[in-house]
Image (cartoon, rainbow, N blue to C red; front, side, top):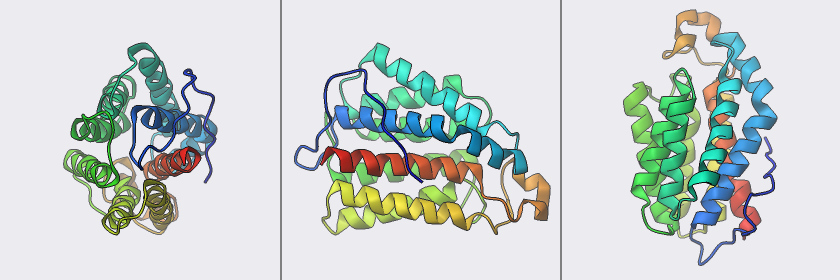
Length: 229
Protein backbone atom coordinates (compact mmCIF):
# COMPACT_ATOMS: atom_id res chain seq x y z
CA UNK A 1 0.00 0.00 0.00
CA UNK A 2 1.81 3.04 -1.21
CA UNK A 3 1.11 6.73 -0.97
CA UNK A 4 2.50 9.69 -2.81
CA UNK A 5 3.20 12.94 -1.01
CA UNK A 6 1.96 15.94 -3.01
CA UNK A 7 3.73 19.23 -3.47
CA UNK A 8 3.37 21.32 -0.33
CA UNK A 9 1.92 24.76 -0.23
CA UNK A 10 5.06 25.84 1.63
CA UNK A 11 8.60 25.89 0.29
CA UNK A 12 9.92 24.34 3.49
CA UNK A 13 11.28 20.83 3.05
CA UNK A 14 10.82 18.62 6.11
CA UNK A 15 13.97 17.04 7.44
CA UNK A 16 14.68 14.96 10.50
CA UNK A 17 16.41 17.20 13.04
CA UNK A 18 18.00 15.07 15.73
CA UNK A 19 15.40 12.40 14.95
CA UNK A 20 12.52 14.55 16.16
CA UNK A 21 9.19 15.35 14.57
CA UNK A 22 8.86 19.05 13.89
CA UNK A 23 5.99 21.12 12.52
CA UNK A 24 7.10 20.75 8.91
CA UNK A 25 7.24 16.97 9.21
CA UNK A 26 3.80 16.88 10.83
CA UNK A 27 2.43 18.99 7.97
CA UNK A 28 4.08 16.74 5.41
CA UNK A 29 2.51 13.69 7.07
CA UNK A 30 -0.93 15.22 6.84
CA UNK A 31 -0.37 16.13 3.19
CA UNK A 32 0.67 12.52 2.53
CA UNK A 33 -2.48 11.26 4.24
CA UNK A 34 -4.60 13.56 2.08
CA UNK A 35 -2.88 12.24 -1.04
CA UNK A 36 -3.47 8.65 0.09
CA UNK A 37 -7.16 9.26 0.74
CA UNK A 38 -7.50 10.83 -2.69
CA UNK A 39 -5.69 7.94 -4.35
CA UNK A 40 -7.59 5.21 -2.49
CA UNK A 41 -11.02 6.78 -1.99
CA UNK A 42 -12.72 4.49 -4.50
CA UNK A 43 -11.14 1.39 -2.94
CA UNK A 44 -12.21 2.47 0.56
CA UNK A 45 -15.74 3.10 -0.65
CA UNK A 46 -15.82 -0.27 -2.38
CA UNK A 47 -14.78 -1.99 0.84
CA UNK A 48 -17.41 -0.04 2.75
CA UNK A 49 -20.12 -0.90 0.24
CA UNK A 50 -19.78 -4.55 1.23
CA UNK A 51 -20.26 -4.12 4.98
CA UNK A 52 -21.11 -0.47 5.65
CA UNK A 53 -22.66 2.68 4.22
CA UNK A 54 -20.50 2.84 1.07
CA UNK A 55 -19.21 6.29 2.03
CA UNK A 56 -15.94 5.75 3.89
CA UNK A 57 -13.68 6.71 1.01
CA UNK A 58 -15.77 9.77 0.20
CA UNK A 59 -15.81 10.84 3.85
CA UNK A 60 -12.08 10.39 4.40
CA UNK A 61 -11.26 12.24 1.18
CA UNK A 62 -13.59 15.08 2.12
CA UNK A 63 -12.17 15.25 5.62
CA UNK A 64 -8.51 15.43 4.70
CA UNK A 65 -9.20 17.85 1.85
CA UNK A 66 -10.74 20.11 4.49
CA UNK A 67 -7.75 19.49 6.75
CA UNK A 68 -5.22 20.66 4.17
CA UNK A 69 -7.24 23.83 3.59
CA UNK A 70 -7.52 24.45 7.34
CA UNK A 71 -3.79 24.02 7.89
CA UNK A 72 -2.99 26.40 5.05
CA UNK A 73 -5.25 29.03 6.58
CA UNK A 74 -4.21 28.60 10.22
CA UNK A 75 -0.45 27.94 9.86
CA UNK A 76 -0.07 26.24 13.29
CA UNK A 77 3.43 26.53 14.74
CA UNK A 78 3.83 23.37 16.83
CA UNK A 79 3.43 19.66 16.13
CA UNK A 80 0.60 19.55 18.63
CA UNK A 81 -1.19 22.48 17.05
CA UNK A 82 -1.01 20.81 13.65
CA UNK A 83 -2.55 17.60 14.94
CA UNK A 84 -5.22 19.35 17.02
CA UNK A 85 -6.24 21.31 13.93
CA UNK A 86 -6.44 18.04 11.99
CA UNK A 87 -8.66 16.52 14.65
CA UNK A 88 -11.06 19.42 15.04
CA UNK A 89 -11.40 19.75 11.27
CA UNK A 90 -12.17 16.05 10.82
CA UNK A 91 -14.83 16.20 13.54
CA UNK A 92 -16.52 19.17 11.89
CA UNK A 93 -16.28 18.01 8.28
CA UNK A 94 -16.73 14.22 8.26
CA UNK A 95 -20.05 12.52 8.82
CA UNK A 96 -20.74 9.17 10.37
CA UNK A 97 -18.36 7.52 12.81
CA UNK A 98 -15.14 8.34 10.95
CA UNK A 99 -15.05 12.03 11.84
CA UNK A 100 -15.41 11.64 15.62
CA UNK A 101 -13.08 8.61 15.78
CA UNK A 102 -10.22 9.93 13.66
CA UNK A 103 -10.80 13.43 14.95
CA UNK A 104 -10.53 12.26 18.54
CA UNK A 105 -7.31 10.37 17.76
CA UNK A 106 -5.59 13.37 16.19
CA UNK A 107 -6.83 15.85 18.78
CA UNK A 108 -5.64 13.65 21.61
CA UNK A 109 -2.27 13.17 19.95
CA UNK A 110 -1.96 16.91 19.46
CA UNK A 111 -2.78 17.72 23.05
CA UNK A 112 0.03 15.38 24.10
CA UNK A 113 2.53 17.13 21.81
CA UNK A 114 2.42 20.85 22.55
CA UNK A 115 6.16 21.47 22.15
CA UNK A 116 7.55 22.69 18.80
CA UNK A 117 9.02 19.22 18.22
CA UNK A 118 8.65 15.69 19.59
CA UNK A 119 11.16 12.90 20.00
CA UNK A 120 10.45 9.26 19.23
CA UNK A 121 9.29 8.21 22.74
CA UNK A 122 7.05 11.27 22.98
CA UNK A 123 5.47 10.50 19.63
CA UNK A 124 4.98 6.87 20.70
CA UNK A 125 3.16 8.04 23.82
CA UNK A 126 0.99 10.37 21.74
CA UNK A 127 0.03 7.55 19.37
CA UNK A 128 -0.92 5.41 22.36
CA UNK A 129 -3.04 8.23 23.82
CA UNK A 130 -4.80 8.57 20.47
CA UNK A 131 -5.55 4.86 20.46
CA UNK A 132 -7.01 5.04 23.96
CA UNK A 133 -9.30 7.88 22.93
CA UNK A 134 -10.61 5.90 19.96
CA UNK A 135 -11.17 2.80 22.06
CA UNK A 136 -13.03 4.82 24.66
CA UNK A 137 -15.21 6.57 22.11
CA UNK A 138 -15.93 3.54 19.93
CA UNK A 139 -15.95 0.91 22.70
CA UNK A 140 -14.03 -1.40 20.38
CA UNK A 141 -11.20 -3.82 21.08
CA UNK A 142 -8.79 -5.81 18.90
CA UNK A 143 -10.71 -8.55 17.11
CA UNK A 144 -13.90 -6.53 16.68
CA UNK A 145 -13.12 -5.87 12.98
CA UNK A 146 -12.59 -2.11 13.23
CA UNK A 147 -9.83 0.44 12.78
CA UNK A 148 -8.48 -0.74 16.16
CA UNK A 149 -7.25 -3.93 14.49
CA UNK A 150 -4.78 -1.83 12.50
CA UNK A 151 -4.18 0.96 15.03
CA UNK A 152 -3.33 -1.18 18.07
CA UNK A 153 -0.58 -3.29 16.45
CA UNK A 154 0.85 -0.16 14.84
CA UNK A 155 1.15 1.53 18.23
CA UNK A 156 2.74 -1.58 19.74
CA UNK A 157 5.28 -1.81 16.93
CA UNK A 158 6.14 1.89 17.12
CA UNK A 159 6.52 1.73 20.91
CA UNK A 160 8.78 -1.32 20.74
CA UNK A 161 11.12 0.39 18.30
CA UNK A 162 11.09 3.55 20.39
CA UNK A 163 11.94 1.63 23.56
CA UNK A 164 14.81 -0.12 21.81
CA UNK A 165 16.28 3.25 20.84
CA UNK A 166 15.66 3.03 17.10
CA UNK A 167 15.03 6.14 15.05
CA UNK A 168 11.75 7.68 14.02
CA UNK A 169 11.82 6.36 10.45
CA UNK A 170 12.43 2.78 11.62
CA UNK A 171 9.65 3.03 14.19
CA UNK A 172 7.23 4.47 11.65
CA UNK A 173 8.06 1.74 9.14
CA UNK A 174 7.45 -0.98 11.73
CA UNK A 175 4.15 0.66 12.63
CA UNK A 176 3.04 0.81 8.99
CA UNK A 177 3.90 -2.85 8.42
CA UNK A 178 2.04 -3.86 11.58
CA UNK A 179 -0.99 -1.78 10.61
CA UNK A 180 -1.19 -3.44 7.20
CA UNK A 181 -0.87 -6.88 8.75
CA UNK A 182 -3.68 -6.00 11.15
CA UNK A 183 -5.75 -4.64 8.27
CA UNK A 184 -5.44 -7.91 6.32
CA UNK A 185 -6.30 -9.89 9.45
CA UNK A 186 -9.76 -8.28 9.57
CA UNK A 187 -10.91 -10.18 6.46
CA UNK A 188 -11.77 -13.48 8.19
CA UNK A 189 -13.22 -11.75 11.27
CA UNK A 190 -16.89 -11.35 12.08
CA UNK A 191 -17.66 -7.74 12.92
CA UNK A 192 -18.73 -7.05 16.50
CA UNK A 193 -18.94 -3.26 16.36
CA UNK A 194 -20.36 -0.66 14.01
CA UNK A 195 -22.74 -1.07 11.12
CA UNK A 196 -20.91 -4.15 9.87
CA UNK A 197 -21.89 -5.98 13.06
CA UNK A 198 -25.52 -5.96 11.89
CA UNK A 199 -24.52 -8.36 9.11
CA UNK A 200 -23.41 -11.05 11.52
CA UNK A 201 -21.58 -13.85 9.74
CA UNK A 202 -22.05 -12.09 6.41
CA UNK A 203 -19.34 -9.64 7.45
CA UNK A 204 -16.79 -12.48 7.28
CA UNK A 205 -14.60 -12.39 4.19
CA UNK A 206 -14.51 -8.61 3.81
CA UNK A 207 -11.57 -6.38 4.76
CA UNK A 208 -12.58 -3.65 7.17
CA UNK A 209 -12.54 -0.18 5.57
CA UNK A 210 -11.62 1.60 8.80
CA UNK A 211 -8.63 -0.65 9.33
CA UNK A 212 -7.67 0.04 5.73
CA UNK A 213 -7.75 3.82 6.09
CA UNK A 214 -5.81 3.50 9.36
CA UNK A 215 -3.14 1.49 7.55
CA UNK A 216 -2.97 4.23 4.91
CA UNK A 217 -2.37 6.81 7.62
CA UNK A 218 0.52 4.84 9.12
CA UNK A 219 2.03 4.11 5.70
CA UNK A 220 1.91 7.84 4.97
CA UNK A 221 3.79 8.45 8.23
CA UNK A 222 6.47 5.90 7.29
CA UNK A 223 6.96 7.32 3.81
CA UNK A 224 7.10 10.89 5.13
CA UNK A 225 9.68 9.95 7.75
CA UNK A 226 11.81 8.08 5.22
CA UNK A 227 11.71 10.99 2.77
CA UNK A 228 12.81 13.39 5.51
CA UNK A 229 15.90 11.42 6.59
